[in-house]
Image (cartoon, rainbow, N blue to C red):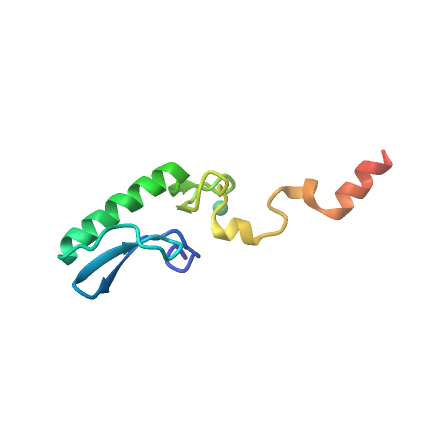
Length: 105
Ligand SMILES: [Zn+2]
């Protein structure tokens, strides 16, 4: 399992700044006002992350190919990293020789 090292670049984070904390969106912009307490900032971060994940349909999803549950990056992402890494996950339909022989027919 390689859930941890999958490139997950849609995370909201909490950054400490002068006088408190701010929630930082995935693009690096501030996504909240100045928050005095870390716990409150974490809570807001989690809420914003949940909402963003829901909109993008990110989260655990069974792989279309092997059915293993993986951390999907969105509705477009339906293959686990293992299956995505294999060039022929579409089977013979995606291999060059299949395309060529299909044209000959
Ligand atoms: Zn898979």
